[in-house]
Length: 232
Image 1 (cartoon, one colour):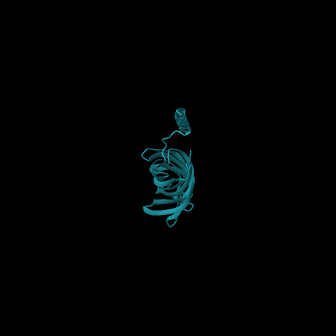
Image 2 (cartoon, rainbow, N blue to C red):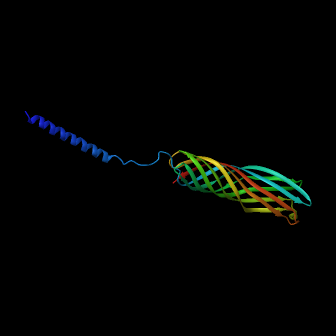
Image 3 (cartoon, rainbow, N blue to C red):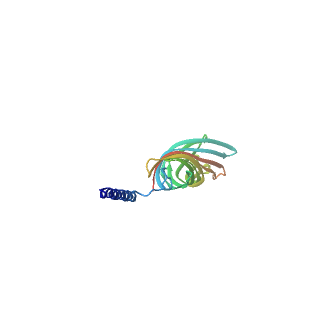
């Protein structure tokens, strides 16, 4: 009669030991815990395409024979191109980065300065190198940007066939200052959409014709664009 209780104790001990061993095996099969943040991380390289509207603004002053002609003209066009860069996100959700873009615009204008003098101006290929800084709300990024830009410009004043009165500056490259702001949203880990406004001031071009008359062209562009990029 004393054997039965002893056997029961031994069997219970063996069962308990088997349960402990089984639990240890299950723990070994479970993945190790990680320290990954549940929030989206914006760090990394990216490249994309953009399209939108370009609004060119030209201020023209023409000084001819002690007369002064002045015109302020704006014109709309489309703009499209590519962009790419790198972001780095800090632990406090601040993001810094660098970006470059290259595009083309169709914005151009044709306006009379005097009765028989017409000014023509247009933007062509443009590009910029900019610093970016922003703050994230998980998959949403608000950012500002500032940098240097360059564009292919044409600034002309035509007076019929009189070459002495013409001021022609075709397909020249002019550098300037650019700044803007925008918003991005990460739809997936890799695909990101963007909306952005960028202002660029390419400065003033001063030209003289054969008769010694002077023309000053101020070139500015407002760009509103949407983009889609892939993060590597």
